[in-house]
Image 1 (tube, rainbow, N blue to C red):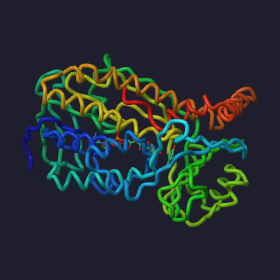
Image 2: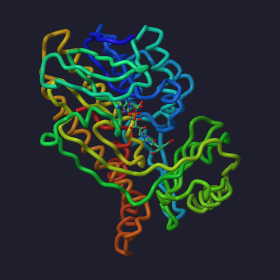
Image 3: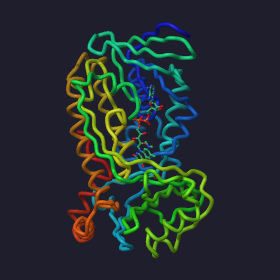
Image 4: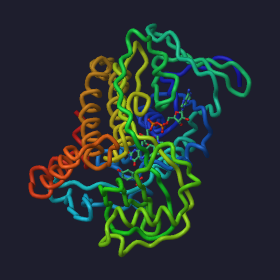
Length: 394
Ligand code: RFL
Ligand code: PHB
């Protein structure tokens, strides 16, 4: 199907941001077209986030895509911080009245795809050479190639939901776009294993050999991470080496319950903090990883993407329903205020919980003092808990 197609909103990127946006717009009677560089099975297979804030769950409920999440997700009322084997539980329920839900990004994406496909959403997969154009005009368009043919989507608005390596952010002129970045001098080696989790709650551990995280996807499937060199060869990380390292870093108390086995996924992810400003240029909006990246330490990436989409769908719905452009005009400013707070939290927790090669004894003692402060102060624990369960939308 080559040629020109018209729609109200052209959504570039069919990850969680793009899918949720299309669902929220469809619920309000607004048409969209979704395009992605990959295909559905590739997108569904990407193992990434695992912890959903209450606001994210609420957004999925509102979208009508939360039935399976409520059946299969694991509500968590707390998590642990560990420092050289000392453990401190952050009781997020007691401190904030809220909880979080453990449910994989793979499952969120599957649920949203199922809903969009059942509703007849127009998708273009495996597209190439994506180019958003005429962003300042009232008739912007997105050009791309699909199955060897040149294709154009003409629309009122473009939503750039195409992740960190996408084309949307690149379409903003260099003299307008400002970017802010910190690349961390290490990565996370993650594995998935079909064994019960070492603990029923997550454990974030700082050990002199490096960070470790014990997480899960279900009562029978665990997700574990250890800090590693970002250039490490995966082949040098046998399962045996991984289990040995994880046990040391979690400490003997936690490790006593560790059930090991053959991993079925193993990968290394870099850690980065990144923000692009502004998040609107003419009639194109950025949402999710297209505009910002957080290191995974606070479990914020997917949640931040969903918060963006909630604010973007509100803006577009107010425009189409009530001819009210207030939320369109304030989108970038409103979203960025929240983004920077979440960036701060993710950076702070990452800084406290990892071994940095350049750290001297001074920084190491600062890390320990931060942990001791959280352990002895309910106020300090509550500050962590409030960020972990998710800040208000605005
Ligand atoms: P995504 O998921 O990257 O989706 C973007 C989509 O855009 C497509 N695309 C293009 N399409 C058309 N044209 C182009 N030129 C395109 N370029 C790219 C891509 O194929 C893709 O389908 O962004 P989105 O939707 O904003 O969602 C963001 C989340 O995926 C992300 O924030 C989280 O996964 C981050 N993240 C984590 N977040 C958490 O909340 N908790 C976690 O535990 C967590 N762990 C992780 C993570 C991200 C990881 N990455 C990026 C490797 C672990 C890892 C390993
Ligand atoms: C995960 O389960 O993949 C996970 C959980 C919490 C994080 C990061 C990743 O902070």
